[in-house]
Image (cartoon, rainbow, N blue to C red; front, top):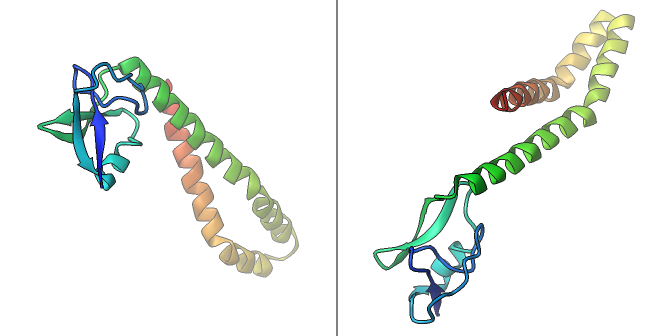
Length: 136
């Protein structure tokens, strides 16, 4: 099934994220297979769909302000997810501290049991620090 992909005079695909350019000329389109059409329905931050040599292609988004806004939103989402993970796994730290006070052998067993969580918490803290440093 072939589908029409409309694009504006600058070559940017119409009706797509992030700019949703309106169709300004009903005669300016390419026909593409459904899977190529469907690919143009989303794009990574900082990019935009264009028609290049008669085919849809991801190109850098020339609107730096829009790209910065979307990057800031993505960064905020990452920070929220990472901080939520730390919050959800805080019980592990409390449990390990309690066991450490009572029995060193049990502490080592518990530490081994939660080794993966501790590793992921360390990675999350490192990534949070990186993301927060990007803002400075």
